Image 1 (cartoon, rainbow, N blue to C red):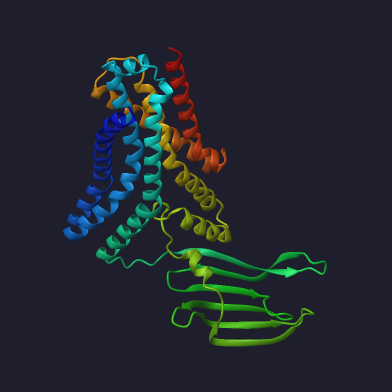
Image 2 (image 1 turned 90 degrees about the vertical axis):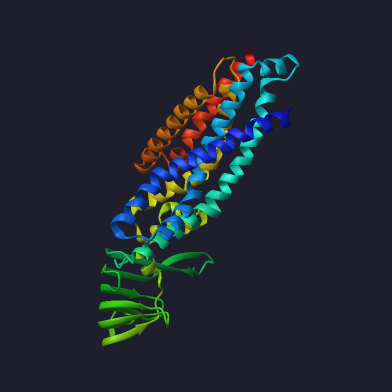
Amino acid sequence: MDRYLTKELIPPFLFGVGAFSSLGVTIDAVFELVRRIVESGLPINIAIQVFLLKFPNFIVLAFPMSTLLATLMTYSRLSSESELIALRGCGVSVYRMVYTAVMLSMVVTGLTFIFNEQIAPAANYQATMTLEKALKSDRPIVQQSNIFYPEYQEVEQPGGGRYRVLARLFYADQFDGQKMKGLTIIDRTAEGLNKIIVSESAQWNPAENVWDFYNGTIYLVAPDRSYRNILRFEQQQLQLPRAPLNIVERSRDYGEMNIAESLEQLEVERIAGDRQKIRKLEVRIQQKMSLPFVCVVFGLVGAAMGSRPQRSGKGTSFGVSVIVIFTYYLIFFISGAMAQAEVFSPFIGAWLPNFLFLGIGLFLLMRIAER
């Protein structure tokens, strides 16, 4: 029975992957690439390369949809042709019949996780870089103001405990894509001596891994808070971390990072202190975790809905699949938006649609088993 159900489930699943991913990449990427070819002179070979790099992202989105389509279509056909009734007459429970679909859905969940973590983010980032390189974008990386970067160090207490204290505070008025401007740095890393650095501008020197400061003053402050010395300079190299530049550099988009990279970016955003970006990234990380498990939920829902006694064709199954998918993603976007608005926690905002549809699938399954 398991071999038979597996053989019946795989063809509609592959059809769904091809159909949904092709439709998605056509709507999202093809029209934009055609416009770039016509308006910006994008070479056709580059456009084809970007198109292929965009495909893995839509395959990830197609996996859950295809799971729903395959289970609903397969179990609906078996129900309409009385094969499920025959199995129940042989003593096979509804739960056992649906078990095959759920197990296959778990396999698809693993594939979705692999694509979503290892393939799609790297492909999306490569597509963006390829497109920007081909269009020879000369725009500055980014322009930001009020760049704030605190650096802490742990200090041991006399009683043996440890606590964090501010070691260095980096502030810049703005970043124009090349230089930091209007800088003030408070440096407390040297024991018994504090430094206050005020500079007109500074630029990262990648060759020597130092900052080049221009037109500034260094104030040396003694432990008794009196000025020990004042040094003025036109150019000065200082050994400071590159982290402030990491904050303002062009970071990857949410779809271009896997979970590990997203967590690293979250730490950078927490240092920058942008509450809105922090919350949005927290929600996106939870959504990345919840997305693969939609396959199991859709597998259960599709198998439960298809197992009802009915007389329906493939067209009806496809239509029902579209309605269920639309309803799920509508709830997904609404709950995600509410999580970003801090109505829900990031966990609830990302996982609520899964829990809701899982409950619906279990309810339908129990109703059918009682008949």
